[in-house]
Image (cartoon, rainbow, N blue to C red; front, side, top):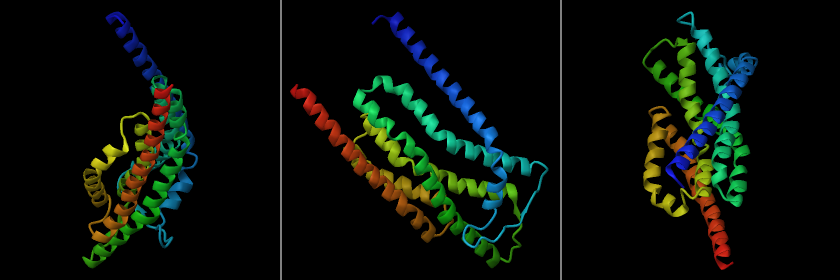
Length: 250
């Protein structure tokens, strides 16, 4: 292939990538507009304590706090809904370079993206966030502080905990996808185990209050997710090896 053909091929790929990014952007904007119709019930739901159901009194410290919070909720809803569509566009972009069986296998992962995202969302909101609220609240009372929460700070605190956990729950799907593309394999994942565990410890400490129990409670499912990823990667890799052996015999 000549340099001219290579340049033309690169331009075609970049054009295709731009087209798919524009489609994702349009879908995200449409979903974002629709998400404003569900912001109000979501807002009232998440302003209740995840354990006791007691409403939390929030305060606005600027004229834009309400607008900012509504925008943040709508954007999170839009992000969660468009995530599977975005990954489908990524798959559609790289699928021409995949073998038929690899193309079919990776397409199966896309519907599970939303399921794993919801699982991480539920774990972050119903398990980790109440622990963080309980810890910080008890510390504030111990110091004799008056708890006056700003709505912007409350939702920033909530988002900084729940969103990273929701994305971390996509780890098995990401590893399976990379295994299907032969970028990762179980042997490499096993060699990376120590580094991965250390990274998960750092993440669990960063997104939880400063106490050992909360960090450990978050670390357990993250480690289980990584080990599940290794197990599933091993199964996919074994099927790939068997398929390669069959093709070599033909």
